[in-house]
Image (cartoon, rainbow, N blue to C red):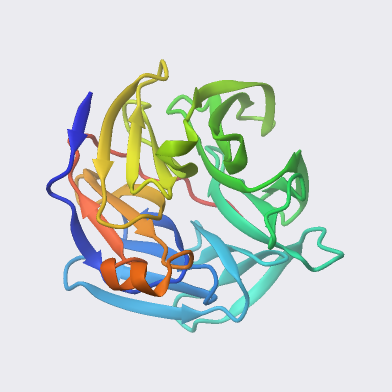
Length: 294
């Protein structure tokens, strides 16, 4: 196993309360990510380290690149679009949230350009959420329930497997995936993670179909080989990494979003860059993200 404890740098010191959902735009050469609790989408340009912030007006859990050049958002009660020029937000579709105590969390686009994102309860109670699929025509289907904290999701290079995290299970699961129909089947365990290592949060797959998992409370990102073997560990100077994505011109920069929301005042003082976006070059290459086709 390769352990990486050096070469991790602070890329963007945005001090997010709950940074999440990093997504590299290979056309524009920038990284998008969210601060869920502050209802913000950030655009980071590594050429000059500048950050542009979009105020969404409601909690936002994840973003997806759209073919039209804008962003699709997983917001508190459903899906919306963000115009990157004007900053305007318009709704696409809602999901069931009759009690108003749930919100969207993590999400990604599948190989056919459908946006998958799931929900969780604000109090994190078990089985209160679900996983949804937004079709390019704006229709929404419920794909998996119940879910407790819907989190990391990504697909194998051939599109035949979907990896998914429901965080309290302490595991990454894998499904058989039908690209044409957008359906999942045959759920099974890919890897289990001991609680003392942290709670699995966001994930991404690299070009070799290794699975990178951010460990909430564990201060690290794990890389798992296709057979589930732990292949590498990237350690971070903060306790709460939330998700990760590859970016940069060669897609070899690993960006990691982090959070400060669970830290005490003393812990914040000891982790002054908690909530920032970190970057390293761990030796693997990523893949361009799938784009929403609507």
